[in-house]
Image (cartoon, rainbow, N blue to C red; front, side, top):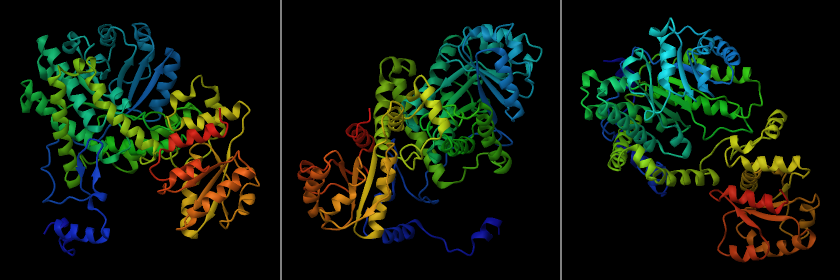
Amino acid sequence: MSQAESLFSGFPPVGYDEWRSRVLEELKGADYTKIVWKTPEGFSMEPWYNRRTTLPSPVVPLERSSNRWLVCEEIGVTSSAEASGAVRAALAGGAGAIEFRLSDPSQADAQNLPLLLGDIDLASVAVYFSGSIGDASVLLGNLASLPEAAALRGGILQDADEASLPDLLGRPAGFRTMAVDTGRFHAAGATVTQEIAIALAGVSDALSRCADAGIPAGKAAESMEIIFCTGTSHFPEMAKLRAFRAIWPQLLAAYGVQAAACPEPKLFVRSSPRTASALDPYTNILRLSTEAVSAILGGCDTLQLSSFDPAGSVSPELSGRITRNIHHLLKEESGLDRVVDPAAGSFYIDTLTATLCREAWKLFREIEAAGGLKQAETDGLVTAMIAPAAEARRAAVNSRKRSLIGINRYTVAPSAEVVATMRSSADPSFMAPEFEQLRLRMLSNLAAGGATPRAKLWLHGDPAKCFRVASFAEDYLRCGGFEVMPGVTMALETRSCRTILQDEPDIVVLCWTGENDIDALPSILDTMRELRHESVVVMAAKPPENAGELLKAGLDQFIHLGSDAFASLRSLQHKTGVI
């Protein structure tokens, strides 16, 4: 008997039908689809899979002895001297790869390149170049003149459509000169399936271009770096990389590459720019950690995490150290580098991977039928394809159905350092998510001499229920930058209106939970309007059948789970004088 069989021999086997029967019993009449996840791509994922229900596991080729990844740090180059200092700090902190983002091609010319690379042992540290590269042939020639040129690893992260094809033949074996970058599509709101399909289409465009130039597909594939961004949806992001690896041989086979000669794709993964908080940077450490785990378990070759503090409110030294240490904790303490493809064998992940393979391949074929990725972009097909998913994601964030901790849920007041940094920025909204711009607007109003609007909660009903409602309302309003005063429990009487208004709150939130409480609302609204018409009255509840009458009677709005919090909070800011 194997160790696994011995471990589980004391537990009776549970079949799918038995499991589903028990789940239906626990749901107590609720629809089973309530616990089935409908992905943004439109397919459904069951909450549990077993040997009978899982899809056949796709082959994810990984010819490696460990799951080690390169810890890459991006360094923006404005001067060679400053970049050299940043390189030394990164290498001392444990970076195994450096990406130089050039602002001018001259920064990597024959004179400046040795200064950039002076502290780097090219035999052990990979180097990447991006940004304003200019003629990649010139840069590759400068690199070739270095004494350690033969040991070069890394690559020139230049779009495959712009890469100089002769460079493919003269490059060092470990140095790639073409990149297929899905980053801009990820930032625009592409789903996981769309990112895979777009990456495949980008590779296909590059292989076609190389074939026209007489360059073998296998040789072309060896010189590519595939760039993905990884978001915070853990399992889909992990499966995304596995699915791309699984489809890669199928794509290359279409260009005549035999399975035995098929090179592995090199996956360069960056953290996502879509969810980073500018006002609460320390929550980004958790996001970066989740994104890193997804990329590592998915099989990335190089991983680059952006600074946890996009606003720059802490020192670059502290930001760099903490961000790098995410890698080290996952490697040295969690041991994520020890097992190759640790997700293999998970019925859930294998099913998700197989489904992504199927859906991405269908979408890839649609792009190919439209003339390839470049043509599909020119014709607007890619933008039209991404737009619905991006809008659905925006709506989910704005309604708080998709939680972004520190952004649209559980916010805290920004530190003095963050406030000072944001005020000194030429365009602070550039680095902040849309929802977070509500609080930026509040900070701008305060800086211009305005006041922070205050809200007061009126509690009534079953204590357990109304305190939950009050907690929801408090979190809801704080996400818009409002100050929330302690709630007050009072009877539903018109004389209570004077008590709730004695502090002159800008907003009064009614957290009432009794079945017939709504009947008292018209008289309460009349009294509050007489006592202080400036106060905006909000009810934390779903709208009843007579909601229209109540709104006409003076109630401003209903706030509840699923309501458009972004629009609601922006409206409240306007009505309370926030400029």
